[in-house]
Image (cartoon, rainbow, N blue to C red; front, side, top):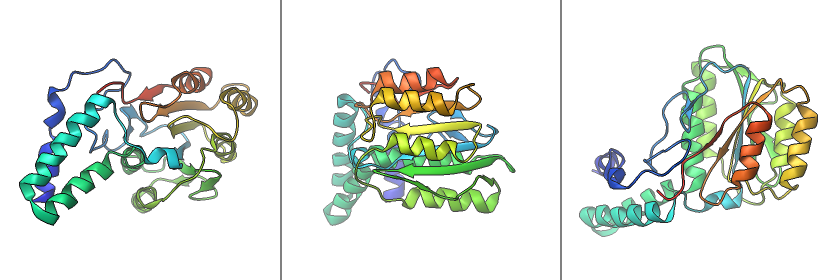
Length: 242
């Protein structure tokens, strides 16, 4: 019953909301872009790819704009009431949990990993105050590594500050050709300009393409757009005001 309710909701309950102007318009706050994609960007086949993922405390807040949060909250209440009792309250709580920025990021990154091509080199750096590695070197994608990495991402627990500078430095240390930075973009270990300057030092010839995914309404759009623009990547976000 619970799975059916979630399926009904994610199939288009929010379809009545007006689309916002954005590079990527994810209308579904409970699902993902699909296997091999992150926020609509096709990552399957990209060379030597490193996901740099924010699990800081700020990622625990709700994603989406005011309208989306209001509409989704009402729908969750109706679905909880339909189930009724403690079970209904649990359904409502679980759906609300799935709308957190960090949960959305986990779904997007895990789904992208599950669709990587066999033999594609990839790695994961996740960070809060400090960065951490999933593996200390890039690995080749296969059934085993894709499953292990996706499960790992879904289970990571974070909290604390947003150490983007250190995380980016660790990612470059893996020798990538592509980096996907996923964050709400409010660094606490350096200023945005200091991070841009450090990336320029690490990537002087622009050989590494850096895509920047801004999660949540409150991410620093100018900073994330600059990261991508200076490194041949795309700036991606869910879109404002849904």
